[in-house]
Image (tube, rainbow, N blue to C red; front, side):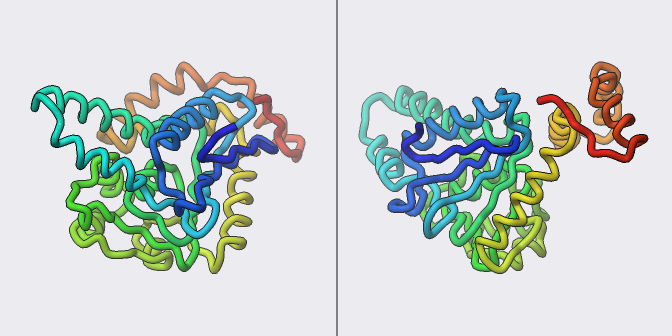
Length: 269
C-alpha cells in the first residue's frame, strides 16, 4: 500500500519497514508523507499495541534524500526574501511533524537499527522509545559535514537520550558511533552480533510489551514523555490527575484476577 514502506500487523505488533534499499533507505518527499500517515494511523489502530521500525537492505536509514537537499539549495535563488523564508519554515515544520509523529504515536516504538543510521536516520531513531542495534550499526549526525545544523529533531532529542557532552561530540564532529559504543552511552538499549539476532530480540521485546495492558502501556508512554519535559514536582502533580481519571479500568480488575488465579492476563484491544 505504500511506496517507501512495508507495514505488517500480526499478534498486536506492527512491523514498519523502510523499503527503499536501492536508495539506501534515504527518504524522499513521498517517504516523509508516508511515515507521518503510517504512524498517525497506527497510533489510532486499536489492534496495534507496539510498533517495530526497521530498514530493508544495506542500511537502516541514510537520512533525507539528496534530491530534497538540492531543492533547499535551489531555493535561495527564488523570489522575495520574506516569502522564501515563510515557505522554508512551512516545509521544515512539516518534516519535523513527520518525525514527531513517531514520538506522538500512542504505542511504544522500538527501532531496530543495522548498519548506517545517518543524518535524518538519527532524527527518526531518537524519536523512538527504544533502540536496538547491531554491532556494525553506526550513528552519525552527518548534517555538520553538509553545511547544515540538524533541524528535524536530533538537536532537541539526542541530548535527552544520551549525556549532553556525548551529544555535543556527535553533533560537532559527525563521527560514527558504532553499536557497542552506542549501547555504552545509552543511545542503544541493546547491541547484538547481527541483524537476525537483533530482530529476534526486538520481536521478543515487542511481544512482551504487547502482552501487557494496552491502556497501561499507552498511559506509561504518555507519563514518561511528560516527565521528561517537566520538573519532578510538576510530574507528580500531573500523575495525580491522570491516574484519578484513568486508574479504574477493566484492565485493573483483569490484572488482579489473573494474578490471583496464576494465569496470563488477557486484555481487550
